Length: 63
Image 1 (cartoon, rainbow, N blue to C red):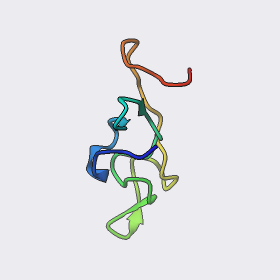
Image 2: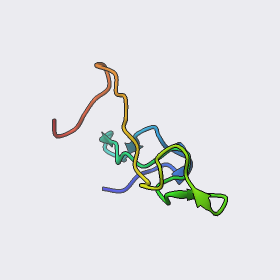
Image 3: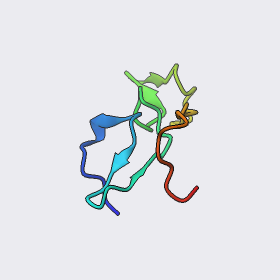
Image 4: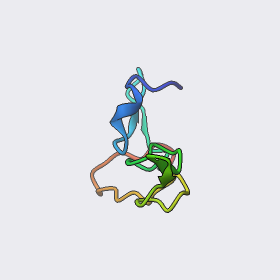
């Protein structure tokens, strides 16, 4: 599946043409690179991934 949205939608979920949504947990600040402005990302600590807080109402494909 491929996401319809440009990479600027993080940390919101990806959306596919068939309506499927999914999260990849990439950091919303550095977008998964682990760094920002040539320094370690302060949000994810350089890991590039962040914990997501999902609501009970949000669909979770495959769960």
